[in-house]
Image 1: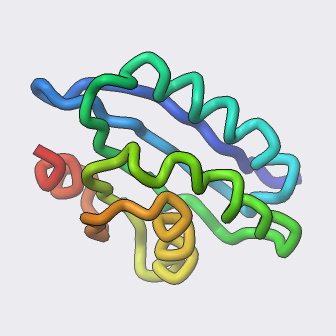
Image 2 (image 1 turned 180 degrees about the vertical axis):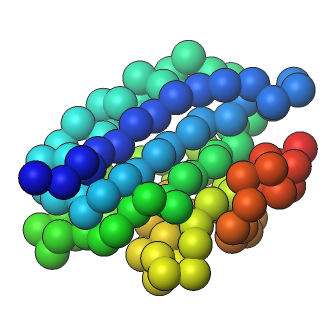
Length: 122
């Protein structure tokens, strides 16, 4: 059995709120079942603030085919993010691009270095 999952958190970077979404392993339908309520809960705490997103996919190995419904479950959050930094590596860039498309930020950049990604969000 391989370790896989999703974690969500809110932090501050200077005066900005950052939603951190970490995806690891090969994600399946069950991994995404709790995602909409987790996002709503995290974003409810900063509803009146501008939120940027830091998506860490460097340990994401892939998505099982049944997880495609996730595309629709996040559409309500499309306008919540002003900027999105995606931490990835060369081997999973295509999957990382699909994940960031779900969140549909107008300003998306991809990075292979954690510090560069966070600096870009400043």
